[in-house]
Amino acid sequence: MSDDPATTPSSTDYRAIRIENLKKLEAAGFTPFGAGAYARSGTIAEIRALGEPLLAAHAAAAAGGPAEAPAPGPAVNAAGRILGLRNMGKTIFADLRDGFARIQLFVNAKNFDRPGDFEAFKLLDLGDHVGAEGELFVTRTGELSVRVQRWTLLSKALRQPPEKFHGLVDTEDRYRMRYVDLFTNPESRERFYKRSAILRETRRWLEARGFMEVETPILQPHAGGATAKPFTTHYNALDRDMFLRIAPELYLKRLVIGGFDKVFEIGRDFRNEGLDRTHNPEFTVLELYQAYGDRRSMMDVIEGLLPHLCDTVIGSRKVKYGEHELDFTPPYREVAYADLVKERMGADWFDLPLAEAQARVRAAELPFDPAWDMLLLTHEVYDKLIERTLVQPTFVTRVPHEFVPLAKVCPDDPTKANVFEFVVGGRELCPGYTEQNDPFAQREAFQAQVDEDAESTDEDFVEALEYGMPPTGGLGLGMDRVVMMLTGTEVIRDVILFPQLKQVR
Image 1: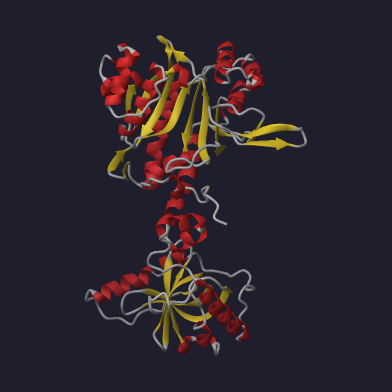
Image 2: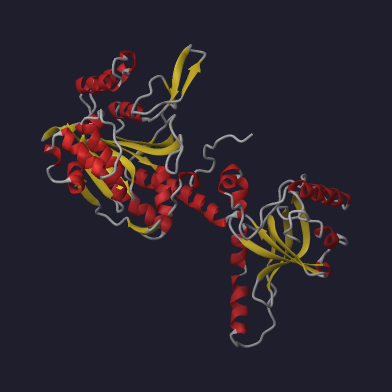
């Protein structure tokens, strides 16, 4: 077919051709959408496993082994989508794929039980779902195939799939038409299989260590547990505004107060903020809390869970990520926030007058707001100049307490929070806290967080703390970013099946 746009059929032309083929198939006795359930011998991967002895015998013969009459292969029923058609005249070769694997169909008129089936097969288009019955055999070129004796039309595709060797090339099309991306791009499909496996193995690892999975409200009366702009809605039955949760933290801590010593939740959080390569307003988080634990206990969780995910899902603790090779073999580096700043800006940084610190930041060509104090200026240096350099797994500890008011302070320095920020590949994956269980300190932190809006303080949670919460460690691990790191993916929309996008129609 010509590549000239003037002669290449449009999507409308292709659809018209397919509808015409559909009518011809109906006239031949095939129902394009009414076949119902189809009894398969298994997935195509399982069917291919049945053919392994045939492939082994063919390989032995090709290597000069004794010439023997090939044994008949097993009879199978395979089903999938046709994503390749090669009409050789008297024989048609078709690539049949399901969500797991591919197998070749060998279609020849002399093998059919029913007259007319061969001519009807010629009316099939790429993307059609069919069932094929026949015996397995190996072609002269070594291709495991089904010698088709009967076939069933399971579903007719009315739209043309993308060119088979490249799938959807346009990035926006891949996100908007994820259903097409998945059946034409095996690497995309494999990434989401791994995502599912990562979530499954995370649950298994935690449950094996006594953690209980729970569910907490997504609609919440207070946008608490983190500092972020929430999505707001109105609950008519209660005549009040509600918020999509920005974090499940305060409800999970209530469960610790209630006596559940180890709890976790894997679920969606929502933040009414920007879209970029590493942020989506709807994202998946693992949040967990452990009674009688602390920040160090949470570091142990990270150093146990991530190697487990590498071992069970990825198959290696060394993962290619962009230009780097990440090594998830523990122990991970632990370094204080202030030490990183001193390494970058000078050992005397925290003794400098503000004006001199601003001059150093200006020399580093980092924009800043002249109204910022030393705390904010320092954090801009960390955020823009330091974090991105932390490639290998790193626990950044002793962060200024002002940035994590829901955590306890370090015993030796009340200006530092007893927390870590876990950074990999230059991006934060997880904060981990020694949780605040002092109701007086918690109320004070809430009030500082919401400024003068006292009604935004979650007084119910503070009251819950007054019933007594044991020493507790907690963390929130961004699972989308974990999948990104472990699969070597640099854009968050590539690991979310249906990411948020700008509307085009």
